[in-house]
Length: 574
Image (cartoon, rainbow, N blue to C red; front, side, top):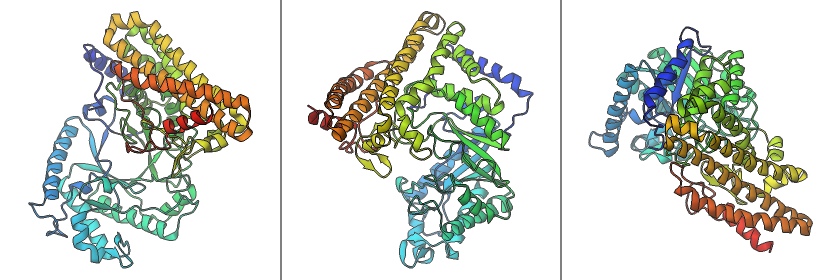
């Protein structure tokens, strides 16, 4: 698995030092009594991080445990392939519950709504769908609510160990789940308002689910407000207030919200809904940043998470939900997750005490990972990583004007690098140029600075080589160094890419010969850097999988992505 933990002869020592670091906090009461974590393959990782709740099945877990035997017994008979798969999942979930109990962790089970097994949907279609559209559930029909309630009752009866149920409505990937049909509770566009029907449907979903989970079964219900854009349930106080204004009985209801205004991008203010409405809230944090390499190279979030933890504490948050891993699609796939482990360590400690120093936390972690003698020099490098990643992932002049949703149009996202082609709100390099052309020199200097920072980080780490090798061995040093080579190589690709294309667009706008020559020079350098990145980085021990020039995770989506865009411009600028 790509989430495999760093290993070595010093693992036992590192684990002992981790627990030793947590001991002073044991006597102090955390400001966040609910500390939930997700994304690990080994549940012991949650206990090590100080969590007291483990989130299992954060996508469609609860729905995938339901057989609907009470309301549609003929739809999924015992010999149906999906029923067999459901029974297998139940056994797997029981094993996870036992392990969580052994570790002293409460269990949270998640699901997206609305999701229904396709055989159940087909069997009951005439009684639960709209008359004008047999493919869409009708939330005004009581027959739908009967099967909705039955699902929760069945699973909560079967698994009394479940302490929390978590529901998401803003994204729904039932089409990726073999045998399931889904309905997204959302408007069709990113307009700054939400219809009365949207608010009414969301309120009924919350009320119906809360009555079953809390009133009938005495568990807690966590409602994730997450959805897409600047103007929805998650990001817009007006929508948030309208929805929860209609929820009269709030007993046992907890609201989950990301600390960022929208998604886990930079150039996002804190979420304006934190602390609103007198509701119990938990706040979400991501350690393997999906827009920033997912741990393929250092990307320390300690300072940002410390500021966010203090902010949410001041506004009365009851807990945190820490994504150890997870988020996004595809790669980069890790062979070694040490840089994510740094973020997990710092974030989990900050959840215990938001006043802790992010630098001091990095030093504690580095002492266990690289040895006491090397720790300070390694942390000097780590503290530069935030600025480096910011400089090569974003275009500052554009991002300053486009705070919130898609501040970099996801030119880099997961393991893909987009180009001129636009897919929805993503991609569209020319639009990034248009939003930056009055500060073009700044945008280009930012990219050069990213490369300089990456080179400096590599040099600083190399200066600690002897101490690292002496205390932790050559493999630890080599693999960590190679991740910094990866960072420098990728930052170089992006630097020449942005500089070359922005000067190309400048030439097309103005006809200036100096811009054409600058474009051609940078695009030639881009081509050399891109070739080197793809040829040299895979040869390095322990490095993550590569970024790709594509518009999406589909391998055939290369037209209009970075490579296609740059090569076309190179030919034109000759």
